[in-house]
Length: 308
Image (tube, rainbow, N blue to C red; front, side, top):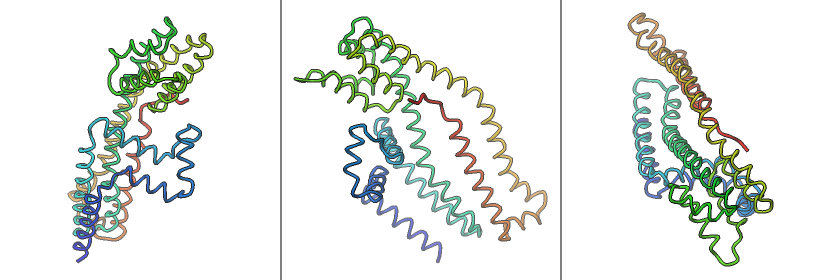
């Protein structure tokens, strides 16, 4: 009967999500609205003006949705969500059948993280590609701007060598500068907000200062060079951490493989582990520790980024 209840709940929840077309962005928006209903409009105005940063949770989900759309992975994300729901249901039934009630919430939590980890991986790949594209585009623009002292011409000349998504940002900048009574400073500020990259933000800030003091143009090249430094550091860091990652994964494998080995080495100990309440709690703790340490390892081995 318990299994039927769980099956009905999961199918009903999945049906509601699919029928209402609920997205992570909508969930985040509703959540932030619930936390601050009266201040929502005021805070959105401050964020738009650059006076206040967007909340981390909302910014993360906004970035994830944007990266999924820009990389064409929105369909894959929905598929991953559906697959994780089915997998969570299967894992719940299995845990109930074998009597591992303490492991059930841990397994569901692990499976529920799969869509999040998939989206984070897509976002990381997208940001890496943007950084590589910015390194090339800003290098061309900066070289041209230093020689001609005209940012509009410099960006126009870089367009044939600039690719998606930077090319679209530059084209919108050119479009804004063509308007009557347009302001180059305002166009630069708007361009700055379109790309979430600290080095690019620093480059735009110095570019704004160049509109008042053209002598500042020589400080643009060292800023662009940070992309090369960042890429070199990440390559060296990845090589150094490769062995550490392998060691960690080997330790996780050895911990997990001990369970089937115990079945063959000492059947009585195995029965105590899987049949007693204390043993089931130990299994749940081991699963939780493996999960949390894996997330921690992933966080500590992320590529480094310049922070302004």
